[in-house]
Image (cartoon, rainbow, N blue to C red):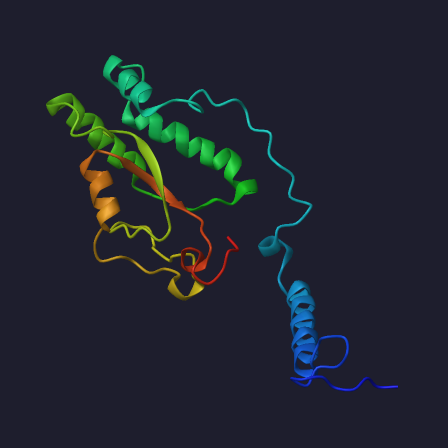
Length: 189
């Protein structure tokens, strides 16, 4: 026995035929996408966390790193190499760094020479940093904003953020992952 329709075409259960169809289509699409999207994109239970060796610089502050460079304990090059090694060791399971700057060590070496000749250029002189992939950098790294539509895109000039980081002496080690268009269209990284 069918229930009489209420105002708005709804039956007694509070859901119209249109809402029922929309819910059915949405559920079907969710199931279909779940089957099509590879496990590497979804993140699988098979990806176990990596137990990396202790990292001496894990809790180091910028002030401590600057003091160590001033004392000669570390150089911009040794810091860049240490952090690049850390990325290489643990990032395969994290998948947080999408591109490493191929010129990072050369930039660090140049900053070491500059520190020796003129002193530090700014508060971040020789400090390794990574930036999100929506920060344009005019170097050999692509800027994709997390979108497949921009794979391989090269920025014609540094963004304001990258420009200021470089002016302060930072070594941009690489680009980190983010959801497409920086969470504008998706929250999946």
